[in-house]
Length: 237
Image (cartoon, rainbow, N blue to C red; front, side):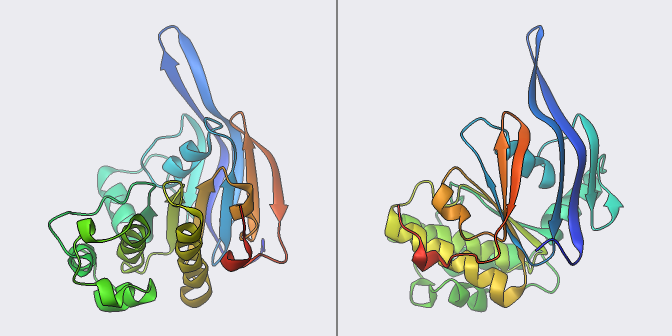
């Protein structure tokens, strides 16, 4: 990878926090490009800054210095309206926690999001894409953790986003369930052409990526291009 359209560009991005009299540097001079239709893994130990990168790309955190370019447009200081539109239309989010509405069925959870977006995917199709058509009428309490996470992925993909951001999406799941969930991400990249950026501390999951961005102490340690990404079903840990 490394060819094609750049949809996200971080240019000399730093993020610091004040802690009393001290300044904590979460990110130090990060420059990174994300290309269309690629599966990127941001890999690193807990506290290295990888989630901060995801949050800046997702508009959930602000950079302290540098630039964020989205689809060729400077997005370093977006207005609230631009940010809302960006999160609603351009991005899909999948977190470690599923954030499903307990009083809605699987399909209703997806429909709730689909109704907010013009040109969204048919919720039933999104549920089918994550292999849950038979559970569409179930409530979250009637589903396993892996099934709930797949509903949250269906909710993200029903928006037809350009980019899905996934923060440790399998951290709360056992191995076999993790593989089911990772297979869904693999399928989305291949069939929908959606770009996926996934944060993980799991080296084995990184084998699926087209590119692996290794983060250490708030800086990019190295970027590995993977010409032969593994399939989810090839992974083991």
